[in-house]
Length: 312
Image (cartoon, rainbow, N blue to C red; front, side, top):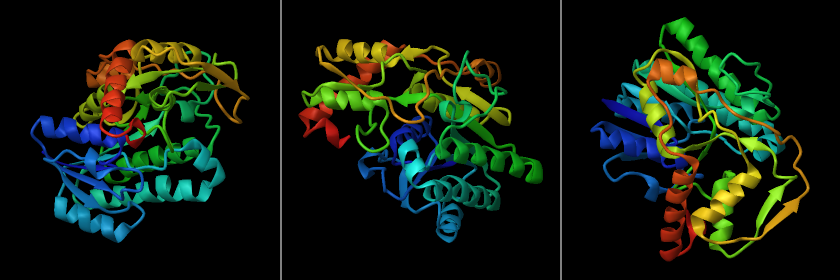
């Protein structure tokens, strides 16, 4: 099929592009390259430079690509930026999503939207299901939840059958250890640079770490699945302390761990219940944490040999 991936030059988006190309789809990657990188885009996909905040440019891109399915991964994904610049966060994640929905509607294209689990559910006392209370602690979670509601409204209004996926803490190759990076990329970037690992707070805070190849598989599965909202996680909690030990095992480097003061608004516990995705989409994560960390470290090590892990 003809597929368009917004944010297709970014970390997760480029893996979705790869998976689509691998199954033989005609793929367009749309990205403003603010955070995405040209070199991330599969050579068998077509890269279009456009910003989802520019409704006119977005419409032109969709008219040219004529997608049957749109995977909407372009986003402002840094919690710290959302707190410092909430209006900018909303402009990208809310207005940008509305623009994508309208551009997709003009082509009668279904939308699969990348949302977030931890930032929407807030503190978890057990694995959060899709019907758990939504209690965002930062504008980023609020803007993603607003994007989900826009999808649901379009589905009711136009019978579009869109899908929202609430990702856990995604990690893997191509994640930049700077900017909006997740802790795995940060840890490996510091290990590659011979630096200590910084942990905020006591390190007992937990997250649901899910490997990017599994996330891409879930995202493709959602394209033909029932409309609705699905968690994409492992259902397994891992503390930051345990993660640091896993990164040290994967790299073979016994990096020093330094504890810093806790950060404002950081969750103590976040884990997703992925059972709905398994039942409705036939998806379950395949990679264990150790397998995923090993693959990620191999990527970082190879990138270091080609001129520095910090470039990826």
